[in-house]
Image 1 (tube, rainbow, N blue to C red):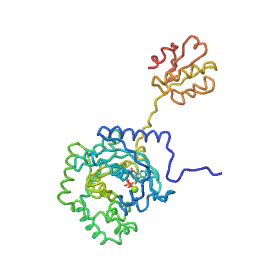
Image 2 (cartoon, protein in one colour):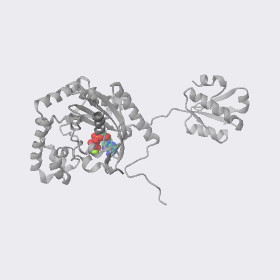
Image 3 (spheres, rainbow, N blue to C red):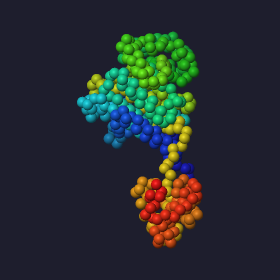
Length: 411
Ligand code: ATP
Ligand code: MG
């Protein structure tokens, strides 16, 4: 029989890879909690319209990447492809507008039907934040500073660039779109087939096409900055000024647009050149219209999300597990005492491995295999005198100590 496989683009996470992902999420949580963000967990599936209506019906996610299904009651449901729509839905469903600002973080699996490759999966994990109810540039800067500190704490800030742009308000965005379309129409024949189609559906997306022929056309496209109205220009200038104040280095990238319809004003990405085409590790922006679109009134929002697997791949050092103590009984009679001592040590806070079977030599080999720091060896004669042998497995040094002093001795 053929061996049973996981679904294409999905992975079993364990061992070193899982440890790194855990570290990414733990570090992220620690950093954002310092900024007053609290964890939220929203359902993994939502009504399809939560995503279909709000991410933009021409976005890549909605047109080709969503896992939609009909449940047994005939409802159209979708596995969440991203976190923001669900958090904003929860914000509106629970009437959280009464107590602004609202600051949430989340982590968990997301699902997108994409072509699997390194750093691109069909089920992947995001860690993200959303800040609702603050309209001023301070929010943009705080959220970016938080992302930066997060990567710094992971030891990655040196290999990551902050790219930033402004899409301006709705008026600026419309003005730019018109200019861009009229430019691209003049170069229609040079565009890739995909981009020819995007020209009517989602022209902004052509700006971040990865096709060489599109890149060439885009090089001379009108600049976003020239279409921003005064208000939008001032807003962006203030964001950049405050980033300078905080000493956060960034690069203004006029070509940076985000693929979703809900973004306004500031958009940003943290990128690395270490993951090939999958170089974006964290991305976000301001979404002032989204809450309103979902019927929650005029509430501004800004947030980001990172790919936990992509960040974990950048951590080159393995994450060490705590080194255990191996408790080794010699002979049948010592088994029970070994179990009691193991329990006692665990209660004192140590990580303890019991070697379940075999003679002393075999058990010592096992102890080394789990990278134990000490072995506590129990012979039946020693037990009668309330003694144990403690062996330092690094130095080989060993010592007989009274059972009552064991915890103290190992500390
Ligand atoms: P890309 O341009 O790589 O497709 P995106 O714009 O679709 O990225 P976002 O929706 O902004 O990505 O998601 C935020 C982050 O989540 C990305 O920067 C990336 O690190 C991660 N991510 C997105 N899609 C995937 C995927 N299919 N597999 C793994 N990680 C992903
Ligand atoms: Mg994508």
